[in-house]
Image 1: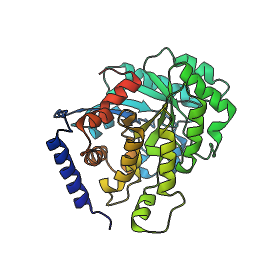
Image 2: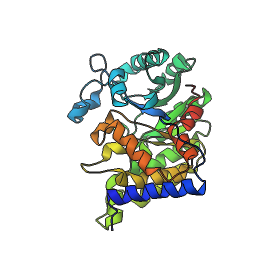
Image 3: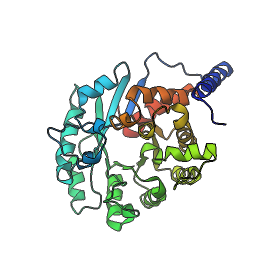
Image 4: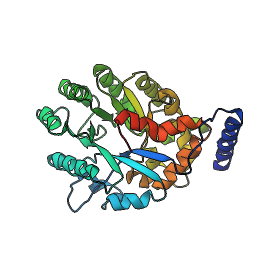
Length: 326
């Protein structure tokens, strides 16, 4: 029988109390602990072109700037790493210059940026060289779940060469892929052992596959077991870290922490406490939850884990992996 939200929260709270009583949770949580959000989107439609927004839900088709991010995170102690927003290809450089300039100011929670890029482009080495001396430039992402990037796209020799270059200059590459193609990401990471990879959005699982598994319903195209096997294969590679992000956007009306818990917990267990980071995925998360709701749900899900592991997820791992100081 599927657990209700009330039952889920009761179990989480009881487990947390048991751990505390046994001495497992040895680190006291501060009143307002630091959160390092490794997946902060911003866009200003008065100056940026995001072609994909044309087909996006209405809630996303407006500007989301630093002031809106501050409002969304009000009351939380948040610092952020900007994540590229799949701008029109001809504006990649201007996007990078814009956000790296914002990160260098003292008027924003943004500490650094993962910029957009095309590892398979002939001018990619020159593009990376333009920014590689900027300490706030932490990595590159090319979205791999668009029609322009079919299955196997990231395994093309020129793409692999570009991703290897990122490792040579000490930058990471974010894997943002369709769940059925996650093994392409594992193959890419194995071919680029000198590059650190960050798996976005828990590997983009279809939350329906977990509901189907629990309820004995008809199986979706990509099953929970298939997703788990892919996550396990990725986690076995030491140059990949897992980002707990994105899945809140997939929540349907009335959904909550119990719907997200299977994916979150599997990723946390597969990658281990030292190779996971938190990502807000705002404002895309608004498709299923507000920023504050996502943080609350994740806190509920991980409440039974030792406090030190929780601190690593929320901030310590990100500070270490990205070389940040706050």
